[in-house]
Amino acid sequence: MTAILLENTLVIALVVILGAIVIYAFRSYSPLGVRMRQEQNRRNLLDEMVRTCPTHGVQPVQSLVRLDDGTVVCSLCFQKVIHADNELPR
Ligand SMILES: [Zn+2]
Image 1 (cartoon, rainbow, N blue to C red):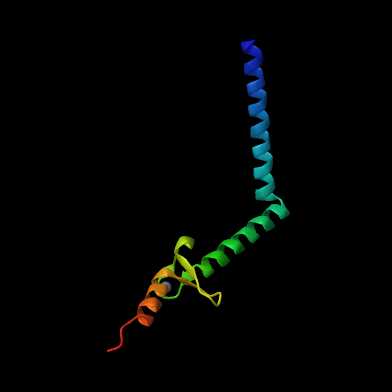
Image 2 (tube, rainbow, N blue to C red; image 1 turned 30 degrees about the vertical axis):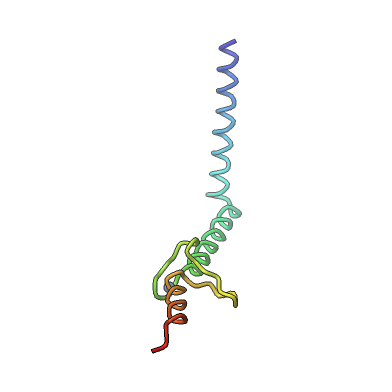
């Protein structure tokens, strides 16, 4: 009984390892895999560009603020705008 369980476990591990090798080879060496990596790189760069504040640099997604007109600004710039609007007149 133990031998059967061990054999089944090893066969499952072998199938998983072969599947991982096939997926790695497909993503690394096939033209479609190269295209998928290039598209992922483009999405990453566009995402980073959206998250980059010209003043404060790249900000985490959690700290971005979407304004009423759809513009996305970083939280530090948003705080500056809010404090400038709420400043008491002298
Ligand atoms: Zn900013």
